[in-house]
Length: 329
Image (cartoon, rainbow, N blue to C red; front, side, top):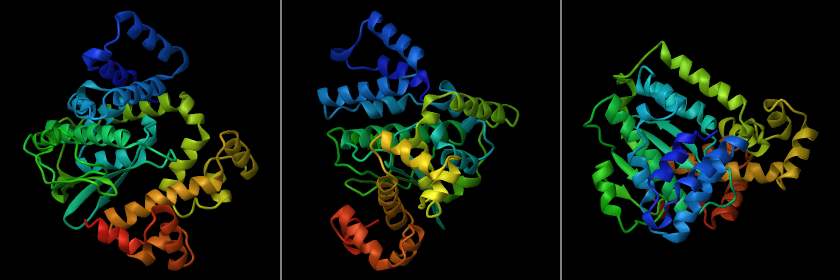
């Protein structure tokens, strides 16, 4: 359920060599109305942009315009929340409303808050896609904080799961914090004191209206009927309980046989989905949350730590200990 305004913004900032005619833009927008394919058109444009220029800074340019007051009802729901902790709660619980290709993980530690981006919805996702998501999402979060809490807010750190681009100096101007590249997760680290900061744009009357409007739009969206997306969202939110087909089918309000049949139509299986969810959650538990090996194995539904080690070696080509040694946080 990607709102059309994001597609319009992307069309507006296309590089000169890819600029579309007014007729082509209108045709794309009409098509998005006809079959609710806004998200697909948006993704195709981004893919084409990076094919044309793999080192494009389009994600950072796009993110600079992602200011909550000018965007969709989901953004307005965030900016009318009372405190920043409520914003993070909405991001965590209602991520699916955007139909995004990433899954956000929010972790509150003793001295900091971190927001990580994982990509469980596809088997493979390119470095350019990860770069676009990190640049736009983290820019959006910082724009929200600076416009609703304080213009002086700076992150404590920014970790990125790709190599430094040629325009890396722009990151320093945009985020104003220490940067680390080639990390296992894209991770924005903020000071814990922000949790209870009030938003200057809080509105207790309009907040539930915006949120309910988003929910109504989602119920009418074809993405709501996407069994792969819904199943993976549940697996990420409800681990390890959802790591049995019976529990997952119950959460999706369908039979186990119905779940299997619908997944097979998309050439997917329950075991493939759970493996992807475990792979992404393993990075969250070990790298973002700094959980122990034993705790991570238990949270991922493994009966033994050795079983988790074997799974991890298969997925990442290294042991968990080597993973943390190579990627210190």
